[in-house]
Image 1 (cartoon, helix red, strand yellow):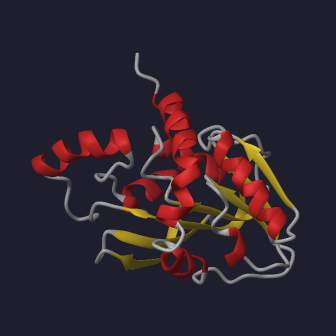
Image 2 (cartoon, helix red, strand yellow):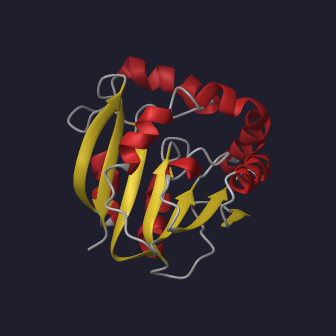
Length: 205
């Protein structure tokens, strides 16, 4: 049986050396736009869930406490180096976003940038984000989504068979996933490629 989690770990370990060269400049503004939708307060505890090489770290306020996790050890090693270069004390760990090793109600903000579209089970990953958020906490979501009002057609589903193996699922719909996890959507802003990439802020009641 094909193990998607193991495949994701292998391919992102392989992508790690070139990830910044491909993604840093291209995705900088969408990341900024996403994080601007959060009202930041000093002392907040923040989880970068699927942190990759830590490209979000320079964009976070310096007076918040940050944990960073990723499935890929190679990605986390680069996040550790980035945190050191920024002189930030960040707890970086290798961890599966679908099985977070944190107690319930641990974080004020969970940031999930470009992870929901690559998770084997996004519903489970969002349920975990919901679990570790404090009541009233915010989910900061940035990813590629199929429009909520229109299911993926045959052509898109066929293309997805290739893109999901190499990079990302292009058929997932944000609102049904967030609703099922229990989140309340506060803001939903197109930030790239028309309305394909969306920055969504949602709250845990």
